[in-house]
Image (cartoon, rainbow, N blue to C red):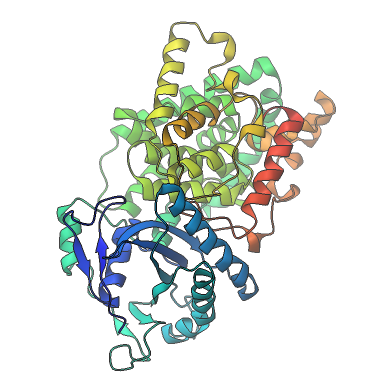
Length: 504
């Protein structure tokens, strides 16, 4: 067993503050869900350690790339990112803890021991990459199917080949301390993502047909400036009615039942109209104002439900409701849920700049109040009639084009948070046509041609992805780079935004 002390505390706490000391791989494995806020399935997690007692510092998560050929590059980038983010925050880490979390594929013959062995080269690459930066990996653990293994301990007496069984959830001293401190574990990452995933039920085919009909009816209207504003008002009115309907529904017992209830309360045509209407960025910005108080909970339920309705070839349309779901979660203090939703939004559309900016700001630990103030002020001015001509968009005058949009997830933290908060508040949104509709507008030849080509042009299957699927991340916490592709994708996004002047 690798013996060392890791202290579980907030970032930046001095070493003499009250701390809970973790003394073994078992306790480290038990601590991971409380560090992340969920069980990070199919993930690489790296945690920085500081000081003589090994106080927890910055952390990042990245989905494990399926192709082992990507592992060397990923390991180098993750090590560099954790170092850079930690140095921006303060001192360089004195050590690193690595977790590799992956269960056997359902229905496969692979055992958890075989998963551990398959991931052993990745663990070694991460140890080597951190060592090359003169920061040792003090422990590297594999967590799979309720067991854990140490890649650093050669002693079979304490770390047997078959692994050790994890403690029963909620029974450890750390679990008790976390509960006392109000920390929550929201299930597994897979479970959190499932709440936002498109339907795979028979009703998905009906929903896709209704989406196609709504697209044919709404896209020509959205491409007309006067009609676009009218569609925006209709979309927001409908969203308000549905939110009131959700608020008035009797409470369900569990998450699955609650989601099923919400799905049953929204008709196919309502979902289609809302999904298509939110592709307009002005409308989306107005919808983002439902971010706090009694509006937040029904808005969150609506955005999750709409993300589940983006079925079939409309998967990329989910970027808008997923980003709104992430924004409401971040605004209400649920950062783990925010990161999951924003990561899925970027998986749906890697070029969606609103999701990029919110994901980066959330990972950097910025205060969402800056953007909330901006949205409140916009709503106040609009209600007073002062912003009617601007169409109700956030920060349009201050955006100045997408050349000012920072690269996605480049680093873990910022040196000047106040300045960064102001930048996010100004740049997080802009008026105009966004999402799939924006790309249709950029290639419009004539109103007649647009009507004929609308459905095909807005189909995600007919668009070039920003990066190969194998190179895109499944969600990064702590500002990790997207396996070498996010920076390139973000630069491409910036150039595209500059060409048509709308950004995203």
